[in-house]
Image (cartoon, rainbow, N blue to C red; front, side, top):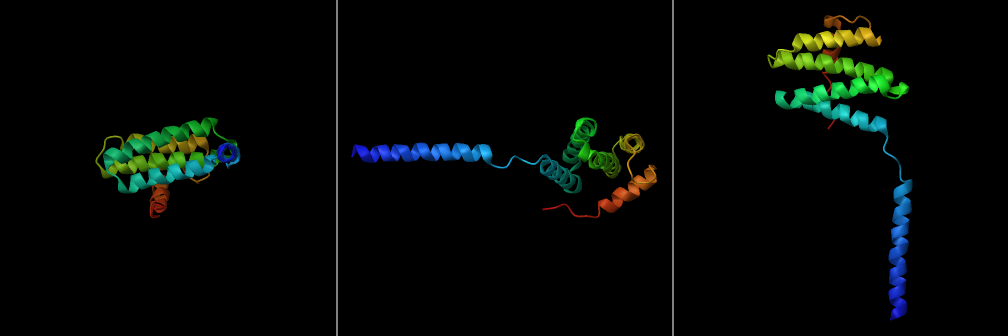
Length: 143
């Protein structure tokens, strides 16, 4: 009887060791995948949530992108710059739709970011940025 309980204990310890080794060696989360998921979540809120929910999510996302542009991986810099500018245009559009007071400030921020960050989108005029984001916004959010 005692021999059987040692085997069970050994089996439990071996399982625990295997789980520990597996946990240490499993794939690390990919930062780009995390950012893409966050971008999609914010886009969903922008397209479907009420103003009180969407606006803070977009503002928070813009702040996060601003940090990534200055201190994130260089490989992601161009995408982060574009996402930041698009986010400010979306904030302006959200303000306009909801008769908010910050539409002009957000659009000015988008133009300024476009100029400062040298985004490869052509002109940095309000009209061109708005038209480009309007085209982007025809795409439905991912489920």
